[in-house]
Image (cartoon, rainbow, N blue to C red; front, side, top):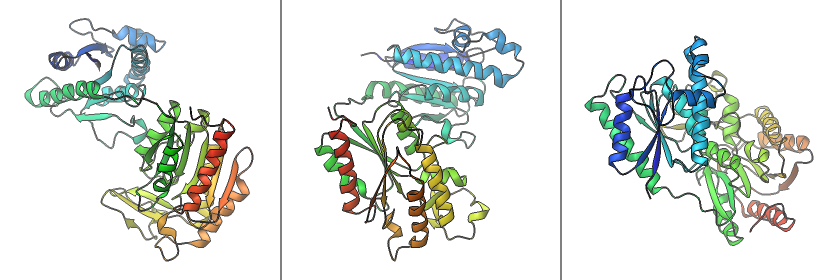
Length: 410
């Protein structure tokens, strides 16, 4: 089946480049829908979606954007309209993927358009600032693809054609190869870390599948948590087992290894039943290149690899983090069950391990006991989070939810 790609850009200044891109997609057997997000100028030829239609989709007009006298205000009008139309086109079956082209202005707008599409829909951005620290993690759609627009700041040339031609093939190929989730079985969304630190998924996956569920495990290192939250918002999960929460602590200390300000909120607001455990909240992670915040510089750091390094939180800091976690859970519109493993929350905090700190662990447990209030429920298990006893307790809670209809298996 022929796939249709939405091509987004400022056709007044990048008409040649965008026309080259659409021509490449057509030559490869794809179809395109062109969207002009210019403000001041006009394309050489009309686009499928005009700049006026984009501004109107934002409840505004091109004239209002011009009269604002501010390029940022004008582009945000266009970004709002472009994202709205992108979502509508996909919902109506008119497009199978999107590709956008731009510098900082076009990239800013393109990120909103990518966020407007569900996970699994190809979304490519060809940008002069791809992979730049200018782009914060919370602006990225979890499955976005970015290609550096090398040599493409002004005018079409053989260098930038290399980027554009690869991008054309990539987005069309992705649309042709994409396999949307079939959702033949209800999905349990689970968070974890590498199996050396948190291992419960090895004990839970097979029993959950035997109960008729599919299990999707997300790596809680920033983008993984972001994808988890996005899918929860889209109603993809029958229930979640959110047992790895270092991203919340990372956000608290200012680490870039976070999933944005909405972590631990999407499932609850979407009415998805949640089991939550404080896995690995004793540790905080920083990017390998990130400067250590001053208040943490007197603590030993473990360099996991060249990309990520970790340090431990004190007892009082863990109390603060517990308060933050529970505040995020309180607005939930579906059952929330907190599961505390009283003998440890990650493999390295076992007796003799490098992160073993029983006093700080006790402070964390005490804060949960004092703070969890109905309708949130609390279960304590006298074992480590990586022990069979923890997995058994989790399965018992899930079985109860299935029995009373809170979680649907069919």
